[in-house]
Image (cartoon, rainbow, N blue to C red; front, side, top):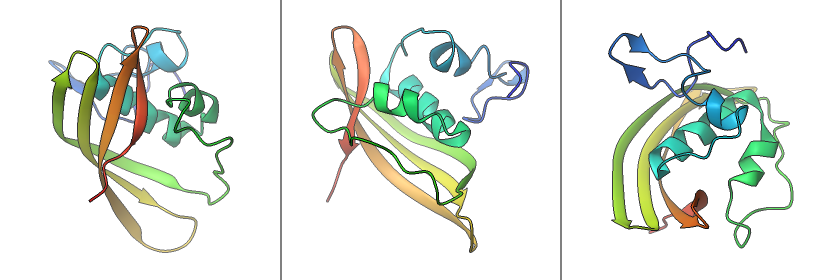
Length: 132
């Protein structure tokens, strides 16, 4: 992906969609830490879209992180819509979103999730999905 391409997460600014370099690219490629849970969630969506399992695993809380990720299903990520971002306290937050995707076979689908995040040593990490 070119740094000038529109970021897969779909974040917009005053002049339209942000480019990858100034949006999630600074986290995935530039080594910057996401400043809040929503930015981390958007960068993780972008990592899924770009098949950057290294970034996904590095931003997953170690107590909840799988050993490996399998992206062999050929999933194509089609779009992200953030519905809600709640800061619970200085080190905990939740983000609700809808991620649209298409598996290797079949119609486009949507995943709606409320994710939990924690800040450890100044870095935001994904914990898990809130379940019912």
